[in-house]
Image (spheres, rainbow, N blue to C red):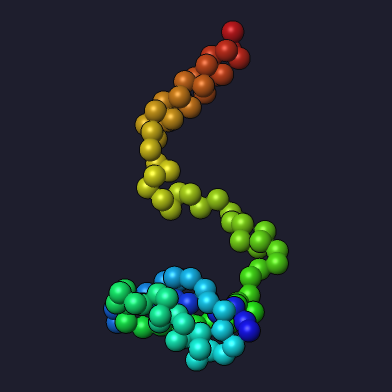
Length: 101
């Protein structure tokens, strides 16, 4: 007996989504059990069964860390830009006048 992860799709153009897992002796039985458990109220039209042992994950998740800061690509990182610019100008102005005295 093996564990199978079950994925369903509600429409032809919709993506598959994980809906649960079943324990079955083979893929055909996993599909049948998946249908009985996760499609009994017509929640989807298509079904996948994937053997859990065939799913691979990264051992070293540090590979997923972002190598460079690219936050400038997102509009949310430009909030309060005017306030930040004015604060920076005040700091620069206070440093240049403070050194001349």
